Length: 257
Image 1 (tube, helix red, strand yellow):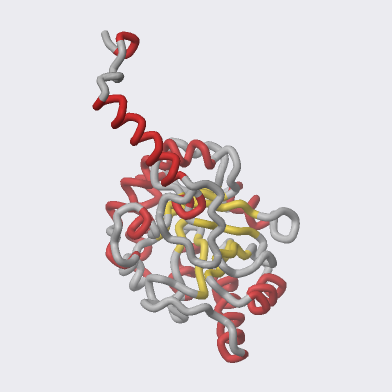
Image 2 (cartoon, rainbow, N blue to C red):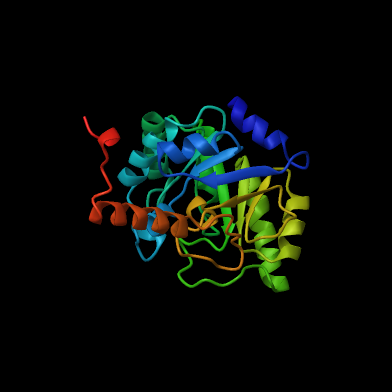
Protein backbone atom coordinates (compact mmCIF):
# COMPACT_ATOMS: atom_id res chain seq x y z
CA UNK A 1 0.00 0.00 0.00
CA UNK A 2 1.28 3.47 -0.86
CA UNK A 3 2.68 5.44 2.08
CA UNK A 4 0.22 8.30 1.68
CA UNK A 5 -2.74 5.90 1.82
CA UNK A 6 -1.32 4.19 4.91
CA UNK A 7 -0.82 7.60 6.56
CA UNK A 8 -4.46 8.58 5.95
CA UNK A 9 -5.71 5.29 7.43
CA UNK A 10 -3.38 5.74 10.37
CA UNK A 11 -4.87 9.15 11.26
CA UNK A 12 -8.27 7.69 12.23
CA UNK A 13 -9.25 8.87 15.73
CA UNK A 14 -5.85 10.59 16.04
CA UNK A 15 -6.17 13.78 14.00
CA UNK A 16 -9.05 15.25 12.01
CA UNK A 17 -8.54 14.95 8.27
CA UNK A 18 -8.75 18.18 6.28
CA UNK A 19 -10.03 17.62 2.73
CA UNK A 20 -11.00 19.99 -0.08
CA UNK A 21 -11.62 19.92 -3.83
CA UNK A 22 -9.43 21.46 -6.52
CA UNK A 23 -9.85 21.83 -10.28
CA UNK A 24 -6.70 23.84 -11.16
CA UNK A 25 -2.99 24.12 -10.33
CA UNK A 26 -3.18 27.54 -8.57
CA UNK A 27 -5.87 26.30 -6.17
CA UNK A 28 -4.22 22.92 -5.52
CA UNK A 29 -0.92 24.66 -4.77
CA UNK A 30 -2.63 26.69 -2.02
CA UNK A 31 -4.60 23.72 -0.65
CA UNK A 32 -1.50 21.52 -0.53
CA UNK A 33 -0.14 23.63 2.34
CA UNK A 34 -3.11 22.81 4.56
CA UNK A 35 -4.92 19.67 3.36
CA UNK A 36 -4.48 15.98 4.04
CA UNK A 37 -6.56 15.11 0.96
CA UNK A 38 -7.14 17.03 -2.27
CA UNK A 39 -9.97 15.69 -4.40
CA UNK A 40 -10.72 16.41 -8.03
CA UNK A 41 -14.43 15.86 -7.53
CA UNK A 42 -17.13 15.34 -10.12
CA UNK A 43 -18.62 18.41 -8.41
CA UNK A 44 -16.63 20.20 -11.10
CA UNK A 45 -19.67 19.56 -13.30
CA UNK A 46 -21.90 21.90 -11.28
CA UNK A 47 -19.37 24.18 -9.55
CA UNK A 48 -17.17 24.87 -12.59
CA UNK A 49 -19.09 23.96 -15.75
CA UNK A 50 -22.59 24.97 -14.66
CA UNK A 51 -24.14 21.60 -15.43
CA UNK A 52 -27.41 20.59 -13.75
CA UNK A 53 -25.85 17.59 -12.00
CA UNK A 54 -22.63 15.59 -11.77
CA UNK A 55 -23.74 12.79 -14.08
CA UNK A 56 -22.69 14.45 -17.35
CA UNK A 57 -19.02 15.17 -16.66
CA UNK A 58 -16.71 13.07 -18.83
CA UNK A 59 -13.70 11.03 -17.81
CA UNK A 60 -11.52 13.06 -20.18
CA UNK A 61 -12.57 16.32 -18.50
CA UNK A 62 -11.84 14.95 -15.04
CA UNK A 63 -8.45 13.69 -16.22
CA UNK A 64 -7.51 17.02 -17.83
CA UNK A 65 -8.29 18.94 -14.65
CA UNK A 66 -6.52 16.29 -12.56
CA UNK A 67 -3.35 16.69 -14.62
CA UNK A 68 -3.44 20.42 -13.85
CA UNK A 69 -4.17 19.83 -10.16
CA UNK A 70 -1.34 17.29 -9.84
CA UNK A 71 1.18 20.01 -10.70
CA UNK A 72 0.36 21.82 -7.46
CA UNK A 73 0.26 18.77 -5.17
CA UNK A 74 3.45 17.88 -3.31
CA UNK A 75 2.43 16.44 0.06
CA UNK A 76 -1.36 15.90 0.13
CA UNK A 77 -3.02 12.61 -0.77
CA UNK A 78 -4.37 13.20 -4.26
CA UNK A 79 -7.71 11.56 -5.08
CA UNK A 80 -9.65 11.62 -8.36
CA UNK A 81 -13.39 11.00 -8.70
CA UNK A 82 -14.48 8.35 -11.17
CA UNK A 83 -17.38 9.89 -13.11
CA UNK A 84 -20.80 8.32 -13.53
CA UNK A 85 -20.87 5.29 -15.83
CA UNK A 86 -17.08 4.81 -15.79
CA UNK A 87 -17.15 1.84 -13.39
CA UNK A 88 -20.28 -0.10 -14.37
CA UNK A 89 -18.38 -3.39 -14.15
CA UNK A 90 -14.96 -4.55 -12.96
CA UNK A 91 -13.39 -4.64 -16.40
CA UNK A 92 -14.48 -1.10 -17.25
CA UNK A 93 -13.54 0.18 -13.78
CA UNK A 94 -10.04 -1.31 -14.01
CA UNK A 95 -9.50 0.09 -17.52
CA UNK A 96 -10.59 3.60 -16.53
CA UNK A 97 -8.77 3.56 -13.19
CA UNK A 98 -5.57 2.53 -14.97
CA UNK A 99 -6.05 5.46 -17.37
CA UNK A 100 -6.61 7.89 -14.49
CA UNK A 101 -3.55 6.72 -12.54
CA UNK A 102 -1.30 6.70 -15.59
CA UNK A 103 -2.21 10.20 -16.78
CA UNK A 104 -2.68 12.01 -13.45
CA UNK A 105 -0.26 10.18 -11.10
CA UNK A 106 -2.94 10.33 -8.41
CA UNK A 107 -2.79 8.34 -5.15
CA UNK A 108 -6.36 7.00 -5.25
CA UNK A 109 -9.73 7.12 -6.99
CA UNK A 110 -13.14 7.70 -5.40
CA UNK A 111 -16.29 5.84 -6.37
CA UNK A 112 -19.84 6.29 -5.15
CA UNK A 113 -21.73 3.34 -3.72
CA UNK A 114 -24.99 2.25 -5.30
CA UNK A 115 -25.43 -0.40 -2.61
CA UNK A 116 -24.25 -3.14 -4.96
CA UNK A 117 -20.85 -2.27 -6.40
CA UNK A 118 -18.67 -3.53 -3.51
CA UNK A 119 -16.98 -6.05 -5.83
CA UNK A 120 -15.79 -3.14 -7.98
CA UNK A 121 -13.86 -1.76 -5.00
CA UNK A 122 -12.45 -5.23 -4.21
CA UNK A 123 -11.20 -5.73 -7.76
CA UNK A 124 -9.69 -2.26 -8.03
CA UNK A 125 -7.86 -2.60 -4.71
CA UNK A 126 -6.57 -6.07 -5.64
CA UNK A 127 -5.30 -4.58 -8.91
CA UNK A 128 -3.30 -1.99 -6.96
CA UNK A 129 -5.65 0.98 -7.21
CA UNK A 130 -6.49 2.46 -3.77
CA UNK A 131 -10.16 3.44 -3.43
CA UNK A 132 -12.03 6.01 -1.37
CA UNK A 133 -15.69 5.03 -0.90
CA UNK A 134 -18.72 7.32 -0.76
CA UNK A 135 -22.13 6.67 0.82
CA UNK A 136 -25.21 8.62 1.92
CA UNK A 137 -26.41 11.18 -0.56
CA UNK A 138 -24.57 9.98 -3.66
CA UNK A 139 -25.32 12.48 -6.48
CA UNK A 140 -24.46 10.03 -9.26
CA UNK A 141 -27.26 7.71 -8.14
CA UNK A 142 -29.74 9.91 -6.23
CA UNK A 143 -31.39 12.64 -8.29
CA UNK A 144 -33.35 14.44 -5.55
CA UNK A 145 -31.58 15.64 -2.43
CA UNK A 146 -32.76 14.21 0.89
CA UNK A 147 -30.76 13.79 4.12
CA UNK A 148 -29.79 10.16 4.66
CA UNK A 149 -29.86 7.78 7.63
CA UNK A 150 -32.56 9.48 9.66
CA UNK A 151 -34.80 6.49 10.29
CA UNK A 152 -33.73 3.21 11.88
CA UNK A 153 -34.11 1.27 8.65
CA UNK A 154 -31.97 3.74 6.68
CA UNK A 155 -29.44 3.86 9.50
CA UNK A 156 -28.98 0.09 9.51
CA UNK A 157 -28.68 0.03 5.72
CA UNK A 158 -25.91 2.65 5.77
CA UNK A 159 -24.08 0.85 8.59
CA UNK A 160 -24.10 -2.40 6.60
CA UNK A 161 -23.02 -0.53 3.46
CA UNK A 162 -20.07 1.06 5.26
CA UNK A 163 -18.95 -2.32 6.64
CA UNK A 164 -19.08 -3.89 3.18
CA UNK A 165 -17.07 -1.02 1.69
CA UNK A 166 -14.46 -1.40 4.42
CA UNK A 167 -14.33 -5.16 3.83
CA UNK A 168 -13.95 -4.54 0.09
CA UNK A 169 -10.69 -2.72 0.84
CA UNK A 170 -11.46 1.02 0.69
CA UNK A 171 -8.98 3.10 2.70
CA UNK A 172 -11.51 5.79 3.66
CA UNK A 173 -15.19 6.61 3.30
CA UNK A 174 -17.02 9.84 2.48
CA UNK A 175 -20.30 10.24 4.40
CA UNK A 176 -22.49 12.77 2.60
CA UNK A 177 -25.49 14.39 4.32
CA UNK A 178 -25.98 11.57 6.81
CA UNK A 179 -27.80 12.15 10.10
CA UNK A 180 -25.48 12.89 13.02
CA UNK A 181 -26.37 9.81 15.07
CA UNK A 182 -25.86 7.52 12.08
CA UNK A 183 -22.56 9.15 11.06
CA UNK A 184 -21.33 8.84 14.64
CA UNK A 185 -22.20 5.13 14.76
CA UNK A 186 -20.55 4.40 11.41
CA UNK A 187 -17.39 6.25 12.45
CA UNK A 188 -17.15 4.17 15.63
CA UNK A 189 -17.95 0.85 13.93
CA UNK A 190 -15.50 0.90 11.01
CA UNK A 191 -11.71 1.02 11.20
CA UNK A 192 -11.14 3.23 8.16
CA UNK A 193 -11.48 7.04 8.42
CA UNK A 194 -14.83 8.64 7.67
CA UNK A 195 -14.81 11.99 5.88
CA UNK A 196 -17.97 14.00 6.41
CA UNK A 197 -19.77 16.48 4.24
CA UNK A 198 -22.96 17.55 5.98
CA UNK A 199 -22.58 14.57 8.32
CA UNK A 200 -21.59 16.09 11.69
CA UNK A 201 -18.37 16.76 13.59
CA UNK A 202 -18.16 13.13 14.67
CA UNK A 203 -16.57 12.02 11.41
CA UNK A 204 -12.79 11.51 11.28
CA UNK A 205 -12.45 14.42 8.87
CA UNK A 206 -14.34 16.92 6.75
CA UNK A 207 -14.51 17.75 3.06
CA UNK A 208 -16.11 20.67 1.24
CA UNK A 209 -16.16 21.92 -2.33
CA UNK A 210 -13.65 24.78 -2.28
CA UNK A 211 -15.82 26.96 -4.53
CA UNK A 212 -18.59 26.75 -1.88
CA UNK A 213 -16.20 27.51 1.00
CA UNK A 214 -14.86 30.69 -0.68
CA UNK A 215 -18.29 31.96 -1.73
CA UNK A 216 -17.82 31.57 -5.46
CA UNK A 217 -20.32 28.87 -6.43
CA UNK A 218 -23.57 30.46 -5.28
CA UNK A 219 -24.49 27.10 -3.67
CA UNK A 220 -24.98 27.40 0.07
CA UNK A 221 -26.94 24.53 1.64
CA UNK A 222 -27.07 24.05 5.40
CA UNK A 223 -23.81 22.11 5.62
CA UNK A 224 -21.69 24.82 3.96
CA UNK A 225 -19.80 27.42 5.96
CA UNK A 226 -18.80 30.32 3.72
CA UNK A 227 -15.37 31.44 4.94
CA UNK A 228 -14.97 34.12 2.29
CA UNK A 229 -17.19 36.07 -0.11
CA UNK A 230 -14.92 35.85 -3.13
CA UNK A 231 -17.81 36.75 -5.43
CA UNK A 232 -18.02 40.15 -3.75
CA UNK A 233 -14.24 40.67 -3.73
CA UNK A 234 -13.94 39.83 -7.44
CA UNK A 235 -16.90 42.03 -8.29
CA UNK A 236 -15.31 45.02 -6.53
CA UNK A 237 -11.94 44.45 -8.22
CA UNK A 238 -13.49 44.16 -11.69
CA UNK A 239 -15.61 47.24 -11.09
CA UNK A 240 -12.43 49.20 -10.27
CA UNK A 241 -10.79 47.88 -13.44
CA UNK A 242 -13.82 48.91 -15.51
CA UNK A 243 -13.78 52.43 -14.04
CA UNK A 244 -10.03 52.79 -14.62
CA UNK A 245 -10.37 51.75 -18.27
CA UNK A 246 -13.35 54.04 -18.93
CA UNK A 247 -11.62 57.02 -17.27
CA UNK A 248 -8.35 56.30 -19.09
CA UNK A 249 -6.54 55.66 -15.79
CA UNK A 250 -5.33 52.24 -16.94
CA UNK A 251 -2.85 51.45 -18.31
CA UNK A 252 -0.49 54.01 -16.82
CA UNK A 253 3.05 54.58 -18.04
CA UNK A 254 4.29 52.04 -15.47
CA UNK A 255 2.07 49.39 -17.14
CA UNK A 256 3.38 50.20 -20.63
CA UNK A 257 6.47 48.94 -22.50
